[in-house]
Image 1: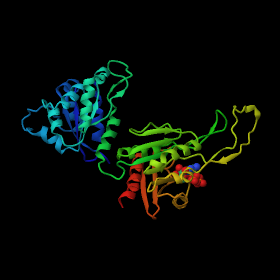
Image 2: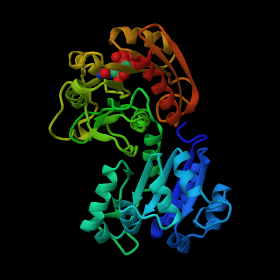
Image 3: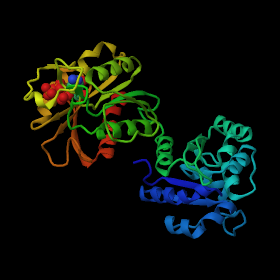
Image 4: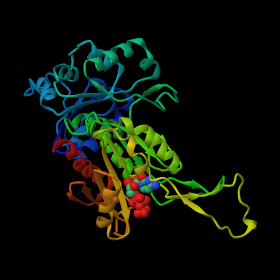
Length: 399
Ligand code: CTP
């Protein structure tokens, strides 16, 4: 949704990280963007124009002196939706900061009026140098967006200091956030809960449920791409941390409740996608139960209903979204939960349907709202479903 039919210019400068620029360009083209690549002379020493021409199906721009393209360096940054410079070397950062316009890329950037995202990559000492620090700070103050560099292996060996270019997927998420423009979630504080919680049976054993956290993680990622500040409160999950999102890890339902209670007063939107354990053992021994003790009878007591227990902490006007994962008759059961839990929206999931619910990459949901509205989201991957849910939730601020 972010890249389809967008015109993106990718500027590539001469650092070894430019082998990753090919992947970035490829991903943009796959996502539906029209991509123009601008190469510096040094970049062309690393990756030839032919590679980018094959990836984009368009001629590469490299020279100010090409006949027939006299004003391309002026127009490109004024008509594109976004310019990404990846990698942005120390030299490019310095030239841009000082207003140089001695090749196609710097001339285009000096005249650009669209958002520009820089992905710096350089030796760690170069990045730590006061000159680079000053130049980058100047560019950020002038409105350039910046992603990375990150700590990780450099061409010259391992380093524990920043220098490595952010991965293409991370650059794409930052680009999507710039492209998402004015939308109801921009500037909002969003809290998303995800994953299962687990309760201790003894110091080594737990009781939990099948939630993977996928839906909540995709929602947190999508909310961040829309310009929100996002806190993800998550139970144990193998999912990787979404770009830009602050993550708080919890284990039990009591810890989840405490974290939600703490986060709620500043939240404009709470999305409770977590599947908290509804019961916990009434007593937990401090030592591991030996198997030789034979059969065990456990007494479980209910945990708190987090949504209900934290109602008083909701900021006035905050929007609250719950989830209802059912096994049959999901919409009717979800409607009852929407009312009982004082929600603005509830996302009804039927785990008995193929491709929906826990531990799968896809979902099919119905979003119900407190006004009686009902919005169907057809079967799709969970990232797409997350976008559709946020489209619907966003209407709360626009209608
Ligand atoms: N929820 C919660 N605290 C719990 C259990 C659930 O806040 N202890 C939230 C979930 O995150 C979800 C919504 O309540 O947003 C509905 O969860 P669900 O498990 O379907 O509801 P329950 O109240 O546990 O009802 P049921 O008896 O169907 O399990």
